Length: 156
Ligand SMILES: [Zn+2]
Image (tube, rainbow, N blue to C red; front, side, top):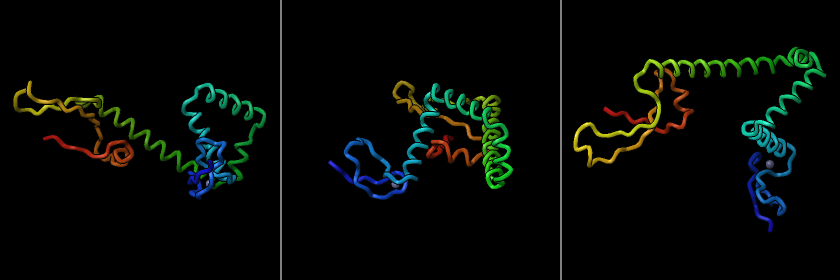
């Protein structure tokens, strides 16, 4: 039986194909391309064999087409600029991460899971509250926003 679904790419409401149990995309070319891109991205992240095979294919193709990327970059300066900006952002994030690692080495408090117990009172009667502790260096606000930390609680 057909049911209405909303395409995960274009957002259009469509009648689903009854042969596809978990259809999430419509049949438009751009949406099918987005579906394949997503599938490939997940496959690259989870399947080591697929990742190695893709790497071999890329290397073979580059061997058969020497100088292709050099010519492509010279003909597409916008691509070069965009790539340069994105790489700069990746480098900056990597530098910030490296700084966090350095902080963890000198700080007596290590990131991890801790039981928080009130400082006063009878220890046997108290329930320990399990909490994760993250160290966030000052001036590293964008990393804190991207992480899974929803709220920060300060303990006096
Ligand atoms: Zn669509």
